Image (cartoon, rainbow, N blue to C red; front, side, top):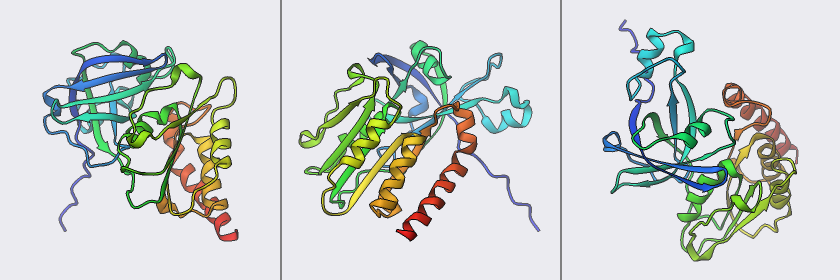
Amino acid sequence: MAERPARQGPKAQGAQVVRTEQITPHMVRVVLGGEGLADFALSGFTDHYIKLCFAPEGADYAHPFDMAAIRESHPRELWPTTRTYTVRSWDPDAKEMAVDFVVHGDEGLAGPWAQRARVGEQVTFLGPGGGYGPDASADWHLLAGDESALPAIAAALEQMPVGALVHAFVEVPDASEEQKIVTPDGVAVTWLHRGDRPVGELLTAAVKGLDFPEGRIQAFVHGEAGFVKEIRRYLRVERQIPLAQLSISGYWRLGQNDDAWRAVKREWNEQVEREQESGTAAA
């Protein structure tokens, strides 16, 4: 019997920093380009994402990293770390990809890197992936998220079908974090200023307080896992919305760093869905 070939992960790609821009006090845009993006392409989603690969301190790998080779030949502490970020925009003519980062000083890995990124700096990434795009056949659209979901929500708004009915809620710390988003037919974003309130409190209240239009909804709800769970329960159990019409996921979770959250995210999502499926059946 022939041996089954080893499973291959996604191929790493290389790019370089073309320019950076401070979008808001806590949002930095890094534009990537270079010959490594010559064959890069998107598949029509608005939540396309890439996984940026960061080498640990003391490891000097040539870009783009060969992730499989590194994992075979180096101890775990020298493996690159990945962080997932939305492709805010892609210019196929210029071969330039914009990625927006939420930055809170030296907190985290990718944010501080984006803050100090320099033109010409080489990067390695995996992807793109994705799975959501505005459905022209939906009667109306609900978009809701915190600042971590803002790049994907903005991309979705910019690609909404002409004449689409959209309710978009974005929760940010304060007015300084609002962004200008060009939308079809003047669709407006409802900005919610969190201040000292818990993340997602205003957002959850806004979604629950919305007078839902008639017809089939398509919803995109992403951000901190706690409020995402609450809104998902509301949509699935109380509103009886089929899972196929929802794109809902926790990008991050209060009290856990990115690595810890990624380690339990799949199991957490499955548990939440089992709980809410039971609630849907009982409703």
